[in-house]
Structures are given as C-alpha cells and as structure tokens.
Length: 419
Figure 1 (cartoon, rainbow, N blue to C red):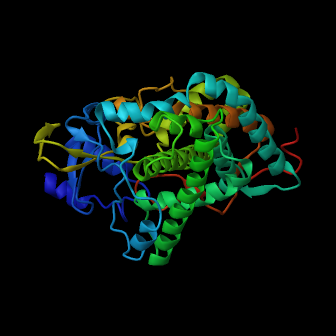
Figure 2: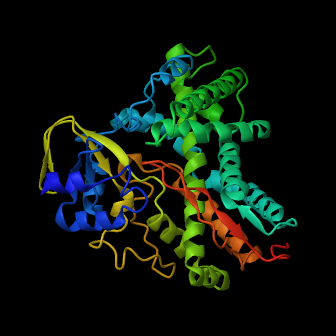
Figure 3: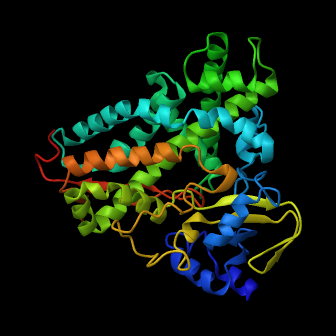
C-alpha cells in the first residue's frame, strides 16, 4: 500500500494545483508515505507533523533549505561568486539554533510590532489610496501585497527606503532557488542566482556600514550578537550574518504576501464570506486564523532523520528525508470539523501548523498576523464591493514549497475606495 500510494502522488503535475483530496485519502489510508517522484517521505497528519517538528534530535533541520530539484550547472558559478553558503540558524538545531535565532526573534517581539504598527497602517492606507486613484481593476499582488510585504520587512530590518524595491524584486527571485520552483528554463535559474548574489552584496554593504557605525536597528543588533566587539568580521562570520539576514528578509517578504494574496482570493471566491467580514469587522481575528489555516503559504518543511525511527507505524531509516506538510495537517479531519471548508466564523484555530511548531516556530508569525489584521481592516472599509475580475483567474507561483498567487486580478466599482 505504501508504494502504491506514493506512486500515485504526483506533486509536479496532477496534484500540484489541488493536492487536498489526495491528502485526505492519505490521512485515512497512510498518513506517512514515500513520494517516489520527490524521493521524500511525506507527513500529512497534524499529530505526526507536530511530533516531527518538536523532535529535532530525531528529525534534523540540516536539509531545511535544500532545493527539491537539482539546480542547473550554470547556476553554481554564479552562486560561488557571492558569499560562501555557510550554515545559518534555519538549518541548525539545539542550543546553537536557539542562540543564533534569538537576536532575530527579539526584533519581532511585541514591543517592536507595536512600534511598527503606525508605519504599517500608514503604508497600507497609502496603497489603498493608490488603488482607488481613478482605477477600477488591479493585480492585487503587484499593486498591494508585494509592495506592502517588502516595505514592512525592510522597515523591520533597518534597510533604507531607497533599497526596498530592489530587495523586493531580488528576494522574490532568489527565493525560487530553495522553494521547489518549477523553472521553465535554465535562464530563469540563472536570473534567480544573480538576484541571490545581488541581494547578498547589498546586505553585505549594510553589514559593513552597521559594523562601523551601529544603529538602533535589527541588522546592527544581529551583527553585535553574532560577533561582539568592534573589529572587522571574519569571512565566515560575515557570510553567516549576511546569509541569516537574507533568509529572514526573504521569508518576511514572500510569506506575508502569499498569505495576504491567498487569503483575499479565498474571501472573494466565497463572496458571502467577504461581505460578512465587511459587515462584521469583529470577525477579523477569526478570519486571520482561518486564512492562515486554510492558505498555509509554506506547503512543506524539510527534515532529515538522524537515526532509525518509527512514525505513524512507518519505519524510517536514518538519513531519510522527510517533508512535513502543514497544508495537509491544517485540513486533518481528526483535528478540525469540516476542514476542507473555508469559514471565517470558525472559532480561531491557533493550533494550525502554518507557522511551524516547536523550536523552529516562525519568528515572524506575529508580524504576519499584524499585516493581515491591518490590511483586512483597511480593505474591508475601503473596498466592500471588491471582487474577482470576471473571466480572469489567479495565477499561482509554480513552487512545491511556497504556495501563493503570483497574479490576482481584482476589480471594484468606480468611485469605491475613497478615503
């Protein structure tokens, strides 16, 4: 049964757009199965996903950023021309992971988010103003979700506004190298690698400047925590700081944008839900958690077994690659009532796996929720008649790891959106 179920799983084609009926079958028949096409054990049930993510001694994060498909040989010389790809906290476990994670986590604490909220509200309002300025249609991702997400994470990190747009474009492209992206050509991979190195070098300039003249920003605090003192950073230390900052910037850009875009798509696909949210803004906290549960932007987290083990009755050998699937776990019938139904009146489901679990729980979860809260409040107030463009469909990013719209056509009546 294990082999036949795994052979039927077609993540690159048949199950790419809508894997959820297959995941529901896996929940019933074999919640841990081997994907022949990916060469990875898939974990689909909520309880098993939690077990993997809390047990770093058995399920290591060392392969967390490994590309799911081999990169073109044309990419490697480009990457070698940037900073060395040294381990960062995202692929560490235990005390070392917690020590390296802490400076970043401190930058996303409640006090920081409270200080950030006025800027977030101001910028989200300005983007709504731009939407309403004489137009009646837009690609929501290009006009709202993407610029909002990169602006907020750049503000959080301490980049200069003049660099926001370039970082947004480069980090979106760079992310595709580690996100199971289905490239159409080697040229696309080359462009992604060039963006990766370009973003590295920009961040490297910030690291050099903030080492010489620290400020009250997250980049400066990370440098100080990683390499106390005032001297020049060693090559390895600089590479780790740059790599860690790049990883957090990428995640802070693509994840909230995907979550906001996918959430709005679900709301507009179910117009009664959108109208209910517009009429009852008190449901926004429920809607945030339902969007997070139903629209998990990170489809899988990679792990690797450190020893022979058993999970859900399935024997896994040492050094087996395992992919826990938050998207599947969030629709586990054993954990949720009507899990395949999008319902913003559902009681908040904070136990979902969208932001991970255990020691690697997403440091930016609070920021992502805050972005959703502010944007939903503004959009429901300004565009209650918002709807999808008839005859046009959303285009999804071709990624096995990061699920979100790349294009989301929306429309509204003339004169709507006025402040």
